[in-house]
Length: 500
Image (cartoon, rainbow, N blue to C red; front, side, top):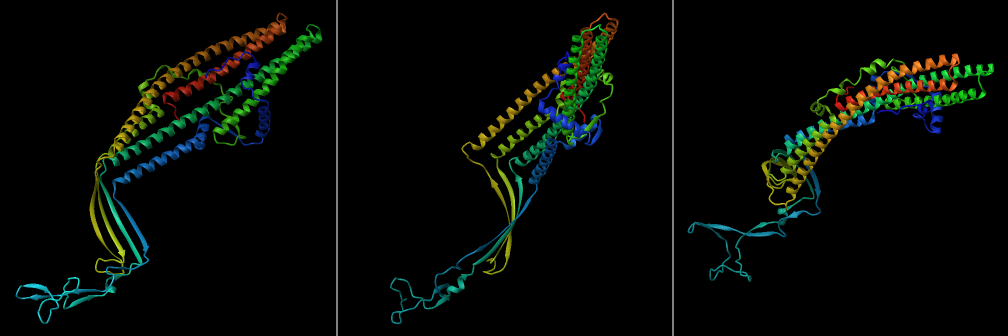
């Protein structure tokens, strides 16, 4: 986040230099911006517009909604489910129990034996029962059952059932899934919060980049004015014969270079405004005027980064949205272990159903709808799956162990990140104080050079050196002010204190 020191106007402009094509685009955009919508915005309003329009944040919001509905769907597994199933079947043939008419022998009660005996045809001479060639007795009387009486029309069959299933014990799967989806919803919320913080930081960086370039635009204007005044004075000296044409050409070359570099800074400012407008969800040709463009930032910058010297890492771990998201990820995987374990445990459910059909045979064969209730219980006990369920459980435990290690590694990285950010914030504050002191010296040096030049004790080169030093001091001071603000925002982000 520390910007390089700028020793001259050339280095200043090079820091924001763009390809030639970009300059042309920026020039066109500058002309268009005069006709585009103009807005005056503050840092908070830029943040709000970006949070409302950012597509990635909208995606995160939908992820939160999806996780919420998944949680509600998992809770529904506690409650009984009611389902209906129905269908229709066309059969080509009727169904018949017999292939032909049936003749059934009859019986008569014999009082002597107190039993029913078959009525058999007897030989009139011997009184013995008659037999057929195959050895079967010949009945004297028979009961006729026609084939048509036992033939049923099943060409069109309608059937259906309404079932109710109430889980009783599913091996802990339902409880684990409810907890898993709850943690998934919390994870989605933390990811949304983390994305919002990233957006806020990006907006802040773009915002202060515009403020920095605006300040440097004013600085380059002042520098060009200084060189123009110097050119005017040297020209008068040349006309008076106390300076050479070479001195005038040296100043004019420096002035032309400063004017070219000023154009580059102007183009960089236009492009930076476009980038900020895009982050805010506005058309890129929107002319944004920032509330801090012309504000005195010196006092505000000197009071920033107060948290760089005092923080509690345990509290940081609790506030960081990304670490909380990783923690919820670990909890989700722990519940995944319980889901895998449930496949090795018995499952018990109560089932009730009302089944009906047309035709039906509840009271003889009738071609009309009729049905009946049924209630039962279903128990499933896993016995042997060649280690498949056990291996799934072990894999789930390994994934949980991996997530715990990733969380521990992330905490170490956060600790390093916080330490580095605090150090950079403190260094940015020191750099700002040093550049402020150096700026006062550069102002005095330029004043002395101007006086010496007017008195004739200093040359043109001495004045240009003083002006270059003044430019460098001002540029470094602007960079230091912006660095303090960006370090403050970034430190708040890594500490989990960034509010939006």
